[in-house]
Amino acid sequence: MLVVLGIAALLAAVILPQLWVSHTIARHGRDRPDLPGSGGELARHLLDRFGLDHVAVETSQNGDHYDPDARAVRLLPAHHDGRSISAAAIAAHEVSHAVQHARGERLLAARQSLARIALASDRLAGIFFVAAPVLAIIARTPMAFVAIVAAGVALLGVRVLVSLLTLPVEIDASFGKALPILDDGRYLKASDMPAARSVLRAAALTYVAGALMSLVNLARWARLLR
Image (cartoon, rainbow, N blue to C red; front, side):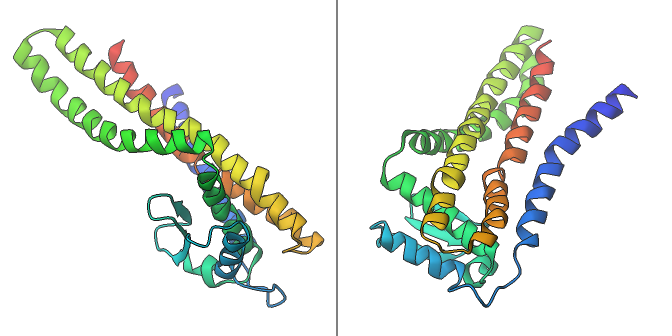
């Protein structure tokens, strides 16, 4: 019973934040004809305002994000073309990542470097975990199995570090940059700012579920070392 409750708690910890994020963004995603422009238009305006005219604004089917390699702010069609509080807030959030990049902010640079390493380490970790039982049988010693699993756990630890670095980067993009930009520039009415704050909070916490999943995976494999 305790095991079942533990699994249920872990699933809730991973799934509920993502559900809350989706609900919050959808709640404030209704088109507002009174807003001066779409999310894509706001993103283009803000990039030009910060001297980032070389950064493109594009639509994407793979979620709202800033691509530092392509130098592009990419928005879902609903946020690129829509005139909603969610569209405005998310556009400002992604532009803030472009600003972080242009300023060479250390946390973003560290996350980008680790993220590239994590892509390779995730693949290696998968190979290690698949190969561990076979190699242990060939070596005929439990220590070989333990050594291989330990190496896999260490590789998964890179993904956890990426997740931990992501959270402060996202929080800064939402509350250190996007919220003041929207407020000071009066891109939204004062009465709309609480809703924008909720959307920006959701944008900052988008990666919480991923961070929790990384920790769960790390803990699950670390148990094999006991």
